[in-house]
Image (cartoon, rainbow, N blue to C red; front, side):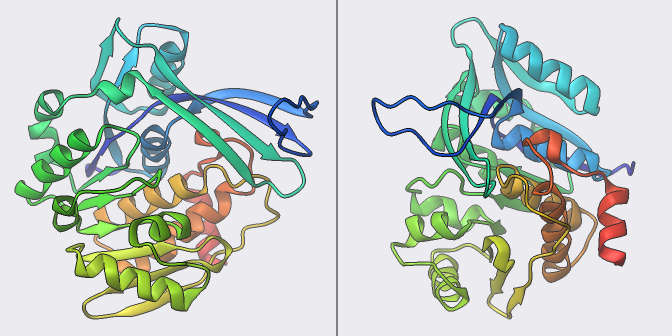
Length: 308
């Protein structure tokens, strides 16, 4: 492990994953083929991914004092994640996510109720000022209230710490957020929701990325599933192909694996294209395994894949 730090502001929810041949219609019941309960939430998953890749990670979030919160606390102790800014509340339960997984294709549909983590306040984020200042990257997502996300980005930006916003799930963003983003990392559906443009291929991604740059983001990395990612800024446009690590089992954690890998690579001073390639390798391994946080690879696995 290196001495570099990444600070992640984000959510924890307990993932309840159900495998099935079909998603039930309203009023319909179907029998599934598998069930698992594990740690989840985009912020938490990304923190686990970054930690397993070798950097020190501090997580800013909020948990309820309940069994789902205990699951989070055990996870962070096991992974070695700094929790001095993981706050607790008696007023709200820890959140949960229902994940429906197609047992043949590995694709998923998810319903998230953020719960306690949605109550993180700007004042609590401010208490992590020194940790953020000491970090090589600041990473956040949209499973928190937008004012809290914006406060975190603004604080890191003022401290001249590189900021990464993974705009997931897709939500309308105030114009004031874009200039705070050194790196904006939507997937196809999120880019489409943010821009109002279709994103079905690389040419569409290029067009959408240009719109996001015009709003003030300094770099856009638009992920495209099995097509890899499009990297775009004022100086370059480059398509980075996906990395095939084996048969796809489940795609649920792919975006979080990518985000954690991308933040680590940037913190290690890789250029944006190399960082995107590294992140594609991390995501490529994660989709060969079930689960979200449990699917995140360690550094030796990623390095071995990239050497191949």
